Image (cartoon, rainbow, N blue to C red; front, side, top):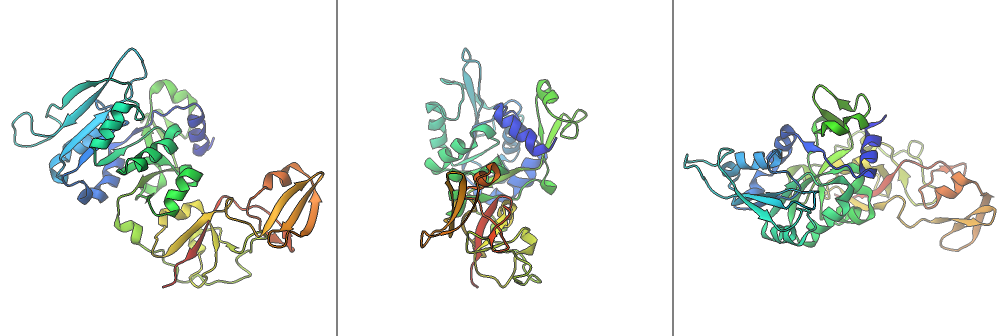
Length: 354
């Protein structure tokens, strides 16, 4: 079973207990240290007792120059209250702030859900949010951070990028991807009782970790990586190499490594492009399925009509079939002058002229 399917299955079951490893937090957060000076950091989806996020920021309280670290956790049992941990100073008098300092523990009048009024008050108090939020609520979670104008660094499924509500934030350069997991592999600790839900090769019983290849870090804090341009040298546009779209004025580029250096029209690229996106080099036009098409695909009784979007004239028709109906507003490659195969999910981009 593919790792991505395991992640999709987990989301369907709303199983969101994926605990981040310390090494992954260290590898990512270390790139943002200058952003944390004199800031209040809030980890609002963490069990403060075991969270590696909490431990990381306590250990790095002074090196990062933090003002305060806060964490709350979700308490699913309605009979119990959740609690908040906060640390602002050296509490044991040893001249430093570390994991041996006792944080202030306060019961909070809610179950710790990030959407609760009390947690939103804490969110308002904070400057930066860093956590691994529930994947099943990722759209709502990011929208809340944007609504309250918070800086953040969070883990998310890669597929979140292509959701309409989130993609627009990438397109407007309000959020972007972080450095990501080593070799693209994200390892998370999970509760033992759910390990049986994962196939061999995804869950390792020796380490207690699951491996996913479609997780990433999303942030709105500027980092040098965001301004690094893709080296396009050696790739030149050749109409015989790059397929045209039948229903969109652009060409298909199936691999990021094959983006031509001398083409300034619209190009459809895989979603993995977002890991190397620099706003100084490219403009994001839209998602392949949502950009306006030059030729419209329309069901007409037992036929599918292809209609010129400008003139509204019928170009040709094909028999109605389920695969053809499902093609809908997808990008189609031009094959023998007609609508051909459908490439995998694409993002439409164009080069920014130097």
